[in-house]
Image (tube, rainbow, N blue to C red; front, side, top):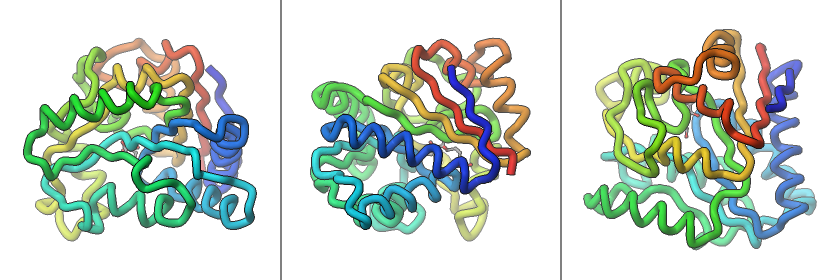
Length: 236
Ligand code: F6R
């Protein structure tokens, strides 16, 4: 495990964008695993900047997102489909058919989870998975108590996650209570993992994740066992 201490949110984003850019430059056919939330926004801004400056080419890149809320349409501004288009996918030359998020609109959740896992495998697996860290130690939407052996599946969101994510919605009641997420097993199969964490409020859970006991009660603690984990942490 490599842990980099960034001096600020901007520095964290720059370092992370550098690593993702290097992946794209060295392996232009890479499969990237992507995350949503507040933390990666500045990283996506920098990747879009790299594309606009002619430094990055997304033509051969395939993307798979970690998760999507159940019950929101793709055009809902709170959906992760919308977020990804808004922050990255519509702003670079990635081929639309090579960008993937769980499709929760089918109503056939189990079949969709299997389709998603099969597609990841058919694309050769994820080369670099970007992750944020939940206040409760979740990765993707694998909440405390999640079993480590799952691939993509449907989850009930933890109360702390609903509360934390309510900042993006009009009210707490508007936050979906379920989501489809890649499981811990799917995440651990990625060849490289890049975990980005910022804010003093996440310091304790990050320390537990990286140096505490490996336990389903702190889902991110499993990352200690990943052979190629890079963590970029910024207190500010
Ligand atoms: C997002 C995701 C979540 C977030 C985590 C941190 O796709 O899977 O695990 O990475 O909740 O969110 P922020 O960055 O908003 O603090």
